[in-house]
Image 1 (tube, one colour):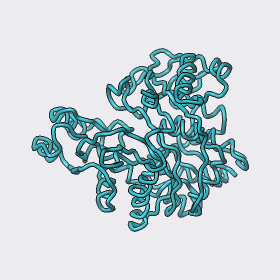
Image 2: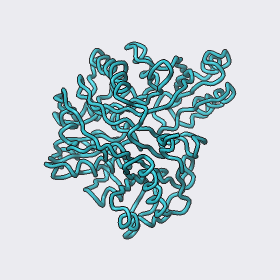
Image 3: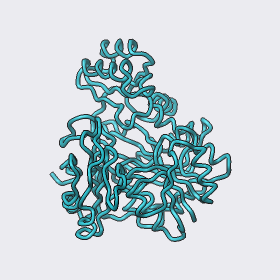
Image 4: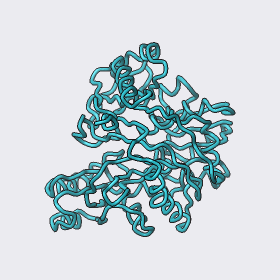
Length: 426
């Protein structure tokens, strides 16, 4: 089987690494990939947000299964296009992808299908949003979300009404996120621990993956601005068998049933970002693809061939499949470039990867913002790489991840020192 992985970040590196090890997989092509991915599989410089170009690549390379990493291609209808041409693709169609690409659509969809989530209001102009904030509709603390895609940075958890008003000016007036901020969603602020819950779905049936937790703020102690994710760990102790069954019954199945009713059965991986409140799990957000950095810790835990599961989901024959996982905890630490999540400096030389390979051969380094320079690599993006380690306990996995990360260096390198700390016994 020949597989095309769409995207060029650490998530896609993890997908390429995992799928290339499956029996029966002859070749993995990544578009566009990056210099780190190119060390393991074929990369082709095709725009990951251009469905027509990706279709041409799949036809030229005689691809059997396409696996979509980032959301942009899904937002532009790549699954619709491939399906119309009879090409199996792992990823939802454009209508279903709106669960991620439009916060307003997602909230209204959840209201229609009685999926538990925070109270909300959709505002299409700044005056409407400011009026709701000043009226105290959601209290003194609330959440402001840009409606469209903003690279994981369009959410502001406002501690005061003044902070919320400032967020409206940033998003809707100054348009820091472009058209993504033409509409905003105001939400009540929920309370409780957060967890990332994934299922693989074939339109009707869903298979749960191991639950994970990520760290979105840039600094230790969950301080500073939101990022695309500074690290993750799995499994999450917050999701036992009873909680898993509750999430499947109250959230996943109503979503899948609702999308069948609305004419776009969901095929792909559905990420449910949840808050475990005193009233039960509630949806904070959906992603319509593997999370990043959660994928980097979840995918290495799969202990059976993953390709047949993705194929079954893409072709609608998943039914009662199960996915087996290692019981060893995995921890991933993101190494970020100077300036991230703001203006990023690039071109810094990366050293120490050979030492990680020699001293920690079972530690995986999944590359994202890197480019080749001679025989080496230099930084070319905000999140540069994710260092992933396993251990017999969360504590052991943490120690190995940070020991390996400590061998890597590039000027301006920044990373959190408390990834997975919440998983340790008090």
